[in-house]
Length: 125
Image (tube, rainbow, N blue to C red; front, side, top):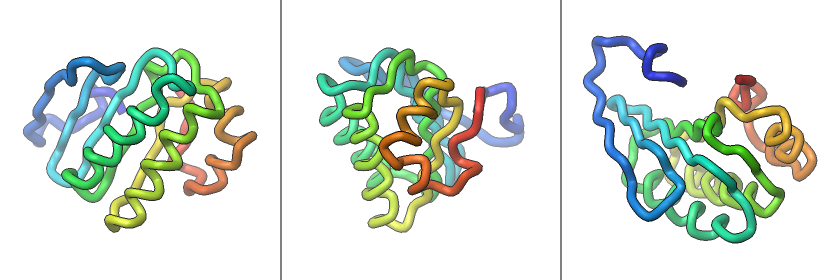
């Protein structure tokens, strides 16, 4: 979800996370949007998964992972999303994955991740 698509009536906090591939974390009361960028692959899947779990544990009831900035998602990188989904379910939160490009959607489908989420949460660009 882009910032232009959000209602201006909500107060939003923007900040950058250092030493990672995450470009932004936006929170609006019960909804947080996190935006990884670059590559989600074998090299960074574990660290990215830990970061998402921390955000889910500390965050609101809805966690949105905006994949618009992800250029490449490998099957190993999908481990990050499975980790986040497991943590969200354990904490009673909802995980939404948005703005996945065609290749990322294909990888998520091939490994079964897209079937673990409701259909509307892996929407197109």
